[in-house]
Image 1 (spheres, rainbow, N blue to C red):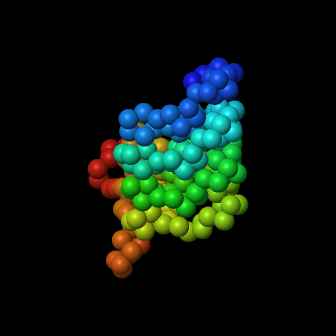
Image 2: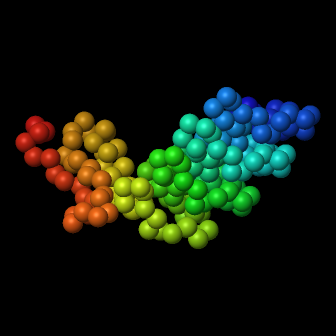
Image 3: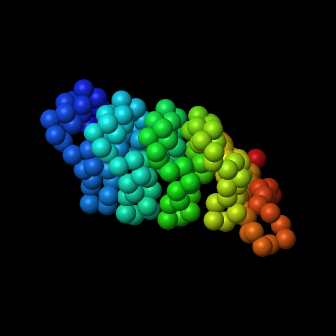
Length: 173
């Protein structure tokens, strides 16, 4: 469906169900959000796709998938069509936290412009900024093949906040 916008539009015009879903609840709109196809996302929404439908495993929405995959334009389209920017998945992540984890500045900007709190925290207390930094460092570690840092999650009631601790003696230079 996502490979050909014209075919998708023809199928929808012929009566295809814009809310069709797989057994686990993954909708066509989620698929368009994941692959970053704005034309199909618009067509599905125009044909009545439920913008805030959730899949049943992690309770994630199309907006979460767009932000997680770095698709700022689709994020904007979903927000403009009423997607809930404050919804949380089963793990407690919001679209902004997904955008932070994926390094998607475009989606983050759309969400912040829409009034999302820049300091909304993950369940472990980590801010979007900390999630973005930890994700960027994890990516650098994967690319370089070394492990210079270990991410310590926040403990809201603990004396120390979230931080990245250097790992010494574990990695040979």
